Image 1 (spheres, helix red, strand yellow):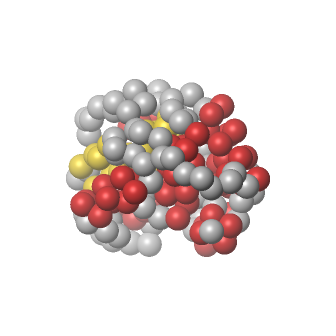
Image 2: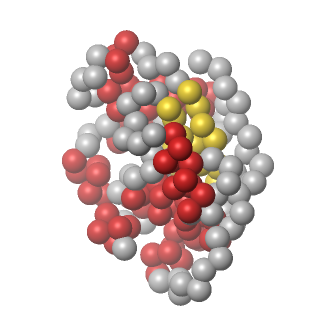
Length: 166
């Protein structure tokens, strides 16, 4: 699978009069300390929260959405969501799923993420995701992402999913 990433920071920051609570401040500090990175953007609460904070603090994060046919929403909806969060430069990768992913087994997320994350890492690009402590408890595939050195700011900062949803 071959594709290119455009990492220059092209997103426009969102302007808001929201006061920064301690969680937003912690996430901002974390993201600003990261080198230019790719955010695995699913449109879920975790990756959306990270993208929103990244845009607010001008962190060098490029969101990446993987279209492999197993997504929870349509391409136009994911682009709209990124725009609502202040990002005009969502990158999309069209991916032909492997046989393991197409089998639609319970480990298809792991197989798909392994396929795409392995490709990104070979290009030397740091990766972050929106995994929370609650998601790790429900889904054992996160351990494989640790093998790929995928950073999970919400998990590392111990920000629970209920707080992310706020």
